[in-house]
Structure formats: structure tokens, C-alpha cells
Length: 117
Length: 236
Image 1 (cartoon, each protein chain N blue to C red):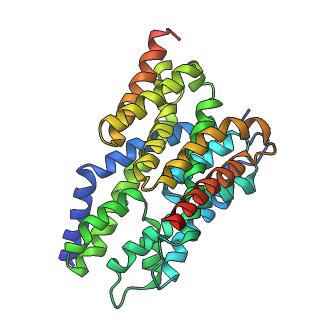
Image 2: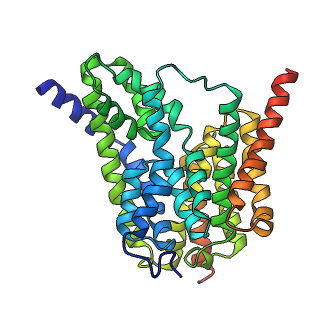
Image 3: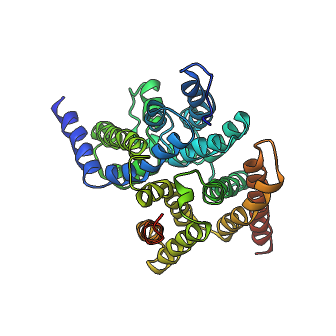
């Protein structure tokens, strides 16, 4: 079931460096090399920002909609409910990250516990 | 250089007064994600040291668990890290001195991520220039060290916790990153990108094959959100 069954032990580390570390570090390295300031309001940056934002939401959605065994003990409506409760707390507490985490986690953990899973 | 040592430990103290614990807690879930994706604990902790960017780590392990194609993972991770460029550009000039060597700047750039960046922007301007670098590295190393440890802790806790808490641990990073993404939203286009991402997810998961669903989602949803913002800016 694991991604690397039958691979050498170094495979996950190689994957981490090649498709994780390098693609992300390139932007930091570029920043060192670029002398002048980049305009954060240019259309290219705004486009990339939107794409990256949608991407992150997509990953969250994949984890919530297609959960692994540990998370799947919470039924779909509980997972979505936890996100909803978190979002409500987020806005109620004037866009507080902390409030969203506490409310979302409390909802999920409590619901799973009450369902006796 | 006792002055430099003092500045270094001032950075350590600031980290331990809150920021280090905050980022450490938020990346505990990445450890459990790594385990779920079939990675060893060393790779989980190393991802914190090498990537040092929660969203990129979440993407990496989340996409790997979903059997996404490696080139798509690399592209997705890279896209999620573009924001590091302007972030680095806003911090590095504050650290640079006349005799600062290039490797030192690369090292400093590697530590720039949301927590260290925010604290640097807040504290560095008021500091004497020679104190800034040691302060920065004290802050950054403490945050990263504690977080690498907590990532490993998240990995080990996964599976040994009661089921409700195990599910909670798995849910920690998605909730945290959704919250920070929403927190960082500045414009209508940002909110549209969040909305489109959420709406498109079930569709791309069902209809886009080959492990490229995330990329299609990001380009279509994010592109549409950007275009809406572009039109609005033009009309204004």
C-alpha cells in the first residue's frame, strides 16, 4: 500500500529532494540572485498567487474528500462539518486562524468520539 | 563576539516565547501525513528542514499519498512556493552588510517561511544592523529545530493515538492551511480562488486522470479567479 514498496530505502529521500526540496528552494535562491525588487502587484504574480491559492484548497479538499484510514473513521458529513464549524469560528473571531483550528478540531474529535468509532 | 551571541539568544528567546511552538504544532500533522503516504520518519522530519514551508510539505505528502505523478507533484510544490521569492526579497536586504558573503545569504534565504518572515519584518527594522543576522539565525534555527522534532512526533503519534485523536491529528494541517490561506486573502480574486478550488475539487478528482487533477484544478480554478480580478481591475 505504501508508495515505495520494492524500492531501495533511499527512494523516499531522493523523492523528497528532487520533487520537494529543489522545486521549492529555487524561489529562495532566485531571490538571493535577483537584485531589484519584484513587483508583488504585477499580473504574473497575481496569477501565480491565485493558482497557488486554488492549489492549496485543492489539496485540503483531497484530504477531506478522499481521506486515509485514520481520518475515514470520521464520516464525510463530520469532516465537512468540522471545516464548516472552523470557518464559522474563523469569521466570528474576525479571521482568527487559532479559532478555526480549535473549533474545527473540537468538532471533529468530539463527533468521532460521540459516534463511538 | 559577545554582542553577536547576545543577539543570537535574543532570537532564540523570541522564538520560544511563542512563534516556534505555533509553527511546531501546525506542522505536527505533516508528520502524520508523511506516515499515511508511506514515507519513513526521517523523511518527515527532513521535509521540515529541507522544504521549511508548510503548504509545500502538505502538497508533497498529500499528493504523494494520492498517487499524483511525480512531475505534477514537483510543479505543484514549486507553484506553492513562488510566494517565497517576494518574502525573501523583503527580508534579505535588511540582513545584508557590506562584507556579507553569498553563501550566508543563501543560508538566510533558506530559513525564510511565514513564521520567521513575519517576526523578521516586525523586529529587524528596529535593530542595529550587526545584531540582525545573529538574531535572525537564532530565531530561525529554534523555530526549525522545534518543528522538525514536532513533525517526527506527529509521525510517531499517528497510529498510537485513540481513534478520535488520530483523526484530529490528520485533520490538523488541512484546517491550519485552509485557515492561513483564508487569513492571507486580500482581494476578491483570492476569495474566488478559494471558492473555485473547493468547487472544482470533486469534479477534477472524478474526471481528471493520471494524477494531474490538482494541476488542472489549480490552473482552471486559479486562472479563472485571476481573470475575474483582472477584469474587475480593468473596469475600475
